[in-house]
Amino acid sequence: MTSSAPSKAVAPAPAALDKEAHKPSNFLRQIIEKDLAEGTYASRRWGGSPGDAAHHASGPLDPAKVRLRFPPEPNGYLHVGHAKSICLNFGLARDYGGVCHLRFDDTNPEKEDTEYVDSIKDAVHWLGFDWNNHGETNLYQASDYFDFMYRAAEYLIGAGHAYVDEQTAEEMRLSRGDFVKPGTDSPFRSRTPAENLARFREMRDGQLPDGAAVLRARIDMASPNINLRDPAIYRIRRAHHHNTGDKWCIYPMYTFAHPIEDALEQITHSICTLEFEDQRPFYDWLLDRLAEGGLIATPHPHQYEFARLNLTYVLTSKRKLAQLVNERKVSGWDDPRMPTIVGLRRRGYTPEAIQLFAERIGVTKSDSWIDYSTLEGCLREKLELTAHRGMAVLNPVKLVLTNWDDVMGTGHLEPCTLPALPHPAEGTESPVRHFTIGKEVWIEREDYEEVPPKGYKRLFPGNKVRLKGGYIIECTGATKDSDGKITEVLATVVPDTKSGTPGADSVKVKAAITWVGVADGMEAEVRMYDRLFLDAQPDAGGKDFIESLNPNSLKVVTAIVEPSLANAKADDKFQFERHGYFVADCKDHQAGKPVFNLAVGLKDSWGK
Ligand code: ATP
Ligand code: MG
Image 1 (cartoon, rainbow, N blue to C red):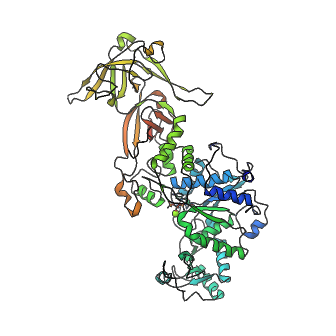
Image 2: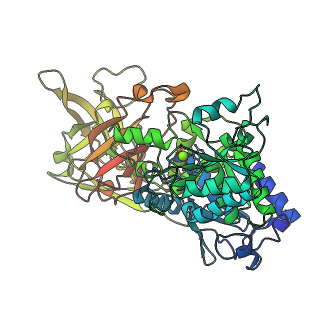
Image 3: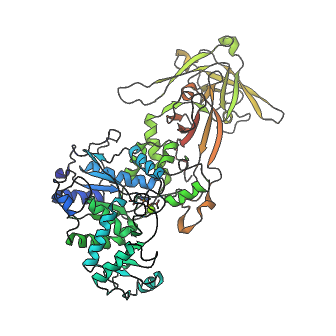
């Protein structure tokens, strides 16, 4: 293990990251530690940028002990599943003296948007990671490798490892066989390299219509692994590409492109999700052939698979999330109910909470579902120590202290204080919140009962409670409108019982309730979020997830908040005492017009 100690010169840990020393091991850590101990990649050279075998051979020994990559397709905003992969890849690189590349996998000439590219870079940075390392900017786009991919294809043709197939798609499907039946050879399989090369160049030069031919690897039509039955590696597709324009009318298939991208970038450990496990033999076949031909550096990268994140009540597919946005089921990719990184962030999630989540769920080799409460628990755990406390009344009714003017003085406002943090970090003191109490305060409507249910300890005629951080009061009744709805709760203040004064404990009460002064409280819009779906697995088995949308996933209330909350800055997180954790909305919150989002409740109410 000592030989794998991270070299700090290569990958300094970003300051934002947790210093939690102990990281539970997992199969990927064990693989990397073994490779480091055995020096599997110690002889690798690095040409300073991605490139072929000759390019890397001309460079020095790679200063990065391992190279990993995070390879998103820029076709949407990243979600919590991607966050797991980012934390995993960048985290392993950091911990083992390596680097992690951010690679935009843009080989598919689909509509791609700089909006997505920018948001992906933001997401990686926000999570606390960086692709810039010891003077290298490891930010790449796969379409920059099209020339090499073409060269690799011609090499395979020349070496007899690939052929142009002109069967129809249907003929190819029928001749592929299935799990029990081997495939049969295409009539085009025995073309000579020279014939194939000429035909492939015609494909490239636009002499064949879209779909008229594909280039296939020549491997084994009887392989038990269907992915090895001469998979297609290039197709004809007249499509404009955002990076290469109209230069190409043939594009590599993903399964061909991805191993080559990894090889050119000298990736050591190429980590992907389990659905690619069956592709691994082709990954190795392809890189072995290209290494034989001297095209790529050796040892070539290896692929390892882990189980993707499945989170209950959450969709983890960019396409399905796009549908929610396009059909306006949510306000946008950053709607606080979305599991996107921008959505989680706006909801009040912190990078530390998401990193903790990624660590806690770990990596495994078998699919499972993670309960949504695990994610919420991580946020609660982080905010418990850092979020300033404050009082907010979410369903206000006025409480009038009928003897206030007589005992305290007409119009008197008494200053009160409470600590903002109940458990300040060792050696520090909690900031202090200032607010005032006067004749009228706002309390929660549910804190008064004319006829109290058994065990009720809050306000009812004759009962005493403490206004938290203020005085003890005794309830005397309430006024009602003609419909019987309470308009004001009435009480008297017990003088000399202010919190923190010698008389505070002179009267015993069973409850303290939260409140906000009418004089210094401020109205705030509070967005009370609930899960977006009613079904724990909204898209399982091809179900229409739109049908299980929760109609009550957002309720907006007008609350009254204490002055320290009214002065919040966008993105500030608070615990509204007794209600939960809230964040000042990063888009709509303004000084004088506060807007808060419910991040997470105080207790786990899921599945209960
Ligand atoms: P989507 O279906 O949402 O588009 P994807 O896998 O096609 O997901 P990519 O942009 O291709 O998205 O993925 C980038 C990386 O993120 C991949 O390496 C992939 O393995 C990883 N990833 C995507 N979804 C998850 C998930 N749910 N759990 C863990 N890793 C994931
Ligand atoms: Mg995808």
